[in-house]
Amino acid sequence: MGLFTQRRPRRFNHKYMFVDERKDRIKDIEQRAKASLGGAAASPSAHERLRGTFLSATRHASKRRERRLAGGFVLTYGVILVLLVILVAVWKMLLSM
Image 1 (cartoon, one colour):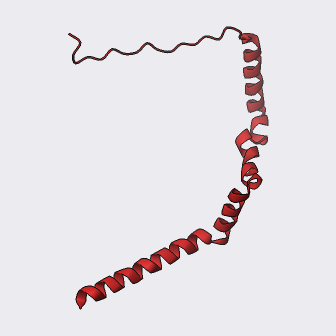
Image 2: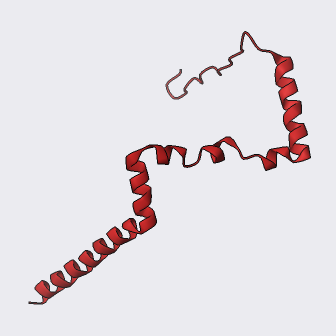
Image 3: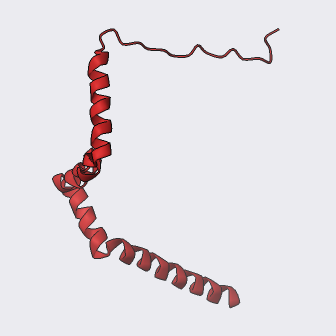
């Protein structure tokens, strides 16, 4: 009986209908050649080229970045920490009365 066993689903196997295998092999050979010559290390990857592009494009993200660089987050957490210390001190004072 199948009370305690679960059937495993079939594996997904997708084969493309229109694939140019020759083009893929040529691309792999080019990448290996660039890596062996050091060309891949000299050129920045796509995510390094795009880093910061979207931050400067939006107003709220750029303001947030400016606040972080100016110490806005540190100041906020410092104020919260000071308020917590004052709250604990007042609480201890009220309990001792």
